Image 1 (cartoon, rainbow, N blue to C red):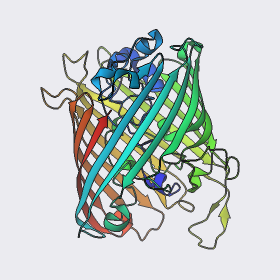
Image 2: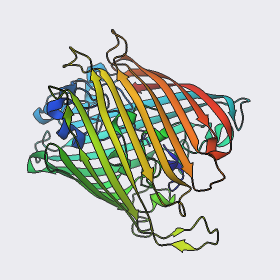
Image 3: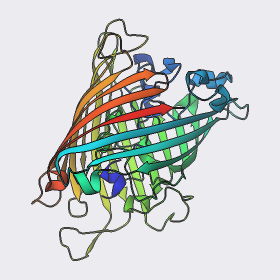
Image 4: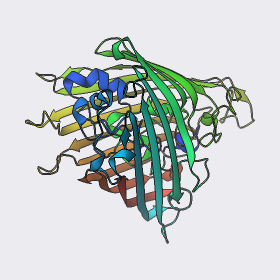
Length: 453
C-alpha cells in the first residue's frame, strides 16, 4: 500500500487491500465506532454495508461483517440477497463471509520512467470469514477473523512511474504473484461493556494504527498508511497483540506489540507468523485519540490522534554509508479527521464535507523517508441523487533523507460512484511530482472497480 508496505522500512490497505473509509460517525456513536471501526480493517474498499444504522457515516465495513452488530447478536440472517452470491454464502448463524474483487487499470500518460505501453491491469480478490461467538451461542464478546487474498497483474511503479509512495494501495511486496495466501487470522474479545478490546493473532497493524478515516477512499497508498511508520501491514502482517481502551466517550488509548520481521521486509503474508517470531525484534505502537463532537447538536464529529512507535532491532545508519548500526528505530505521527459541514436533512443517511491531515517523522539516519505530510478533502453525496457517492482531493508529500533529492508529492483526485449494493466504479487521477525524488513529473490516470460477491 505504501512504501511502508512495499519496502517496509522502505496497505492497504490496507489490508488486503483493504481499504476503507469511515466518513465519520454519528454523534451518539462516535466513541464506540472509532474503536470498533478502524481503517482499513476490512478488505472491502468502499462497498456500502447493509443496515448501517450502527454508524451511519461508515461506508466501509469493519471486519467484513455484512450485518449490523444488532443483527449478528440476534442470530438473524444477514441481507445477503443484496449481493451476487446466495444468502447462505454470506451469513449462517453467526458465521459471516465476504468476497470482494478489486480490479484497476492505470496508465502513465506523461513523465515518470516510461510512457510507451505504460498501461497495466491489476486485480485483487479478498475472502474473509468472521465468527461471532455470541451469535453462535458460545460466549459473549468474542470474534474470530480469517482473511485470505490473492492478486494478479502488474503495477506501473517499478518500470513506468518510479514513485516511492506507490500510486495504488493494492500494490505490495514482497509476496508471490497469483498465489492465494492466508494473510490474517486473529481473535478479539471485548470487556467492560465494550470499553476494552483485546486482539491477538496474526494481524495488520495498519488496521488499528497510523491511518486517517477519511483517507480510506483514496487509491494512493500514503492516504491509507502514514508511510514513515514502519509497521507490519498488508500483504505481510505479523503476529501480535493489541489492546484498545475507551477511557471516556472522548479519550481513547491503543497499544500494540507485533513481530518485527515484516517491518524489515520479511515475507510473512502466506506463513503462519511463528517462523520469524522473535528473530527480528519487536514493533511497538501506542496511540492516543480524542473524539469531540462539534456543532450545536454535536453533528460535526472529529477524531484527533497522536502516536509513537518503536522497533527494537538495530538499523543501519544510512547517512554514514559504512554499515554502522544504530540502536533501534522509532518515530511519531499525528493525524486528524473532522467533518466540516453536514447537509441538513441527512441525519439518517449523513452526507457532507470532511477533511483530514496527517504527519509522520522518523530519524533520517536510518530511514529512506524521514518526514511525511498529507491532507485532503472528501465529500459524501456530492450530487443530489447520489447520496452514497464520494469524491475527494488530497496531497501526499514525502521528504527523503538524501538532501539532494526533491520531495515526492502526489496530488490525487477521484470520484467513487456506488453503482448498486455490490458494485463501485472509481475514476482516479494522480499527478506525481519528482517520483522518488529525481524522476520526471508523472500523470497517472485510471479506473478502479470493486465487486462484492
